[in-house]
Image (cartoon, rainbow, N blue to C red; front, side, top):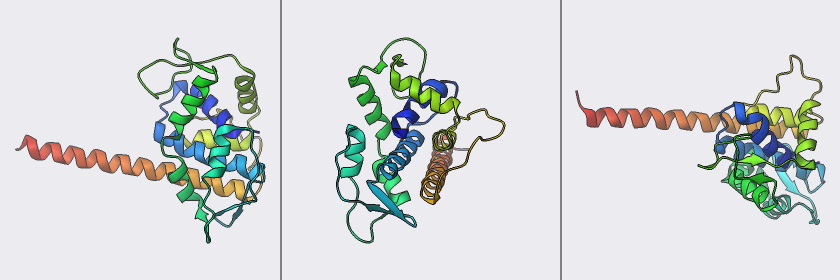
Length: 202
């Protein structure tokens, strides 16, 4: 199961009606990669520490890069630190990967995301259909990560709950990181406004 790619697709497709920030999406993609690594048994969580398992080959290139980026130094990296480190510009990396694979086209108006000046459109691929099926089935991890970046599923009641403490820890860390990023944005906005007022004068 490729939660990270599915999340990117949902952001491109369903997220077109919502304002999804690159930074928010990058943090959520890093969390989604961690979910995939847990499910691939490439890592385990010890409380909030990311513990790498013995190296194994992963077919997905980006997920392989994520596995290679894991810290192997005791006491290992905390989940929130992983999100900020791995998440840097991660949405742009996924955009490039999708374009290189022919799954994201620079034309049209459908599936737009604020990842640059060009209008981007998802190709009609099996990957897209898989992601939309998971979304329609209200798969708890995918829905939770999408909601963290402001893409509501629209279901009146969730159909399921997160399966396991590790996944709950990851999703909670993503929510916290997105809120922290928003707080930073607001603080910078206030500081910029105050600076402008100083130059404007009485």
